[in-house]
Image 1 (cartoon, rainbow, N blue to C red):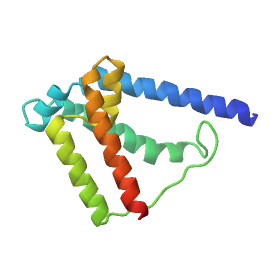
Image 2: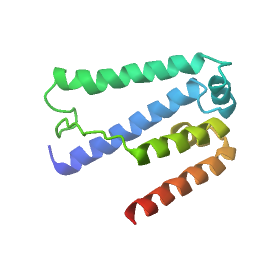
Image 3: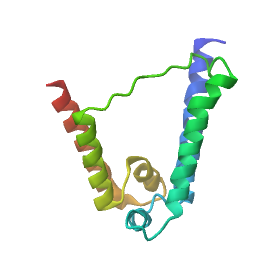
Length: 141
């Protein structure tokens, strides 16, 4: 298989998976900040099932697929990376959680909500982008 064909397949697979992910977020109502805030206030438990399903799929994909096949479907090899918790990770997670709790918006669902026409979430995405930019600038220095 040529590199051009493999690159096209990877782009196509990425687009299909992204569309499927966005559709799932929309179907689960995770693109509605009101629903997310109800979940965070323990008024709506539906998103708990969504998150549990996502964790289950992730565990199966990361732990099960490498045992079933020796190489990924589109080539390359399976790799593991060491995750390392430190002070910066904990602070970043806390800031992310506070932002999520205050506005009910997570980056993935916010982008999917734009596709559904919820343009009010542009403000949240701009804030997320500014925060990511600041983190990148402060980490380099």
